Image (cartoon, rainbow, N blue to C red):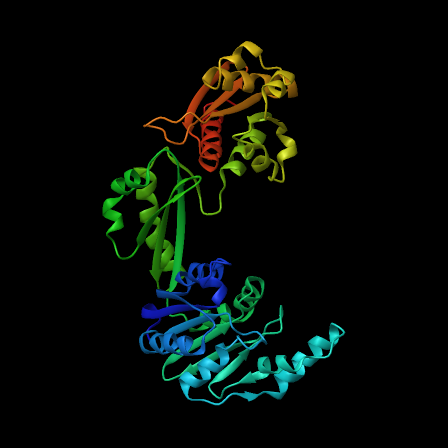
Length: 405
């Protein structure tokens, strides 16, 4: 099989998925890692704990995919029938593996228990399979190679799947990879998803490098991906596209890859020797915790005030007459100035929201005030907490970049 054209499929097994009792994070976890291995994911399916239906979906996957990833159904109970379904689909017999049985009994012994008889099914295997160790649980996986196909089973609990993937599955897939994928994510603010798409329309049509656009709480992300035979070749191809994107989106790219707005703002505050104080009303409350999570936050964050009532705003130093005028730019700026004065910071942030709905703004509005030694200014945005926090941080970033020092 050509590593550049491997077709993959993910099958998540468990009736609880179909009932909406849990979210299928396993499929997302696997899907996010396949591109870096040069593996193309074509299908994701979910099926309940029903042997006949599992066999049906397994057979369909076997007929059309090169690699099949299966999660769930490896437990010891009667409704865990993933192993039995695979064995029947492949026409093979499950047998107890003495080494697996020994490992299981030793694990239960360390816990101070005798192994229940029902767990014996977790020590079974078929001739075309190799066992995949599971250091985090009692359910080992299977790695099946047959008829030019690869079928990989992993446990359903996400913590166990993550360990199995990182310690065994990914390293083995990396050994087989015939191509590499290098990616770079550009994080932008100030454009809609459609607007950003129009600006890079010609790049979206390319097959290699590929460019994807995603709307996120902290703006629009542009994910550039390059496939090549070596990392060096991929990096060389990436460099030209990187230059073009930076030219097109000049001034709106605030970070790349793992950068976060709060970390960037924190770094700017530390670099310029400035401190920050925050006052948020009950519509907000997200900004101060986000900044506080930064390890160096004590160097710049004076504190965060949550003003849930008019009385609390007054106690924090906001003029009652301004409060009586209701939410707006004036109140947001007054809150920013009060936070700055009360906590003795260089910069103050104030946020206040209203539930007032209009045709143009069906979500209400959040008003954001930024105050420093030169005065205050305000901006307003639709009342969506995750986007408001990003807006505040982006506005603060712009303000800091424009400050001397």
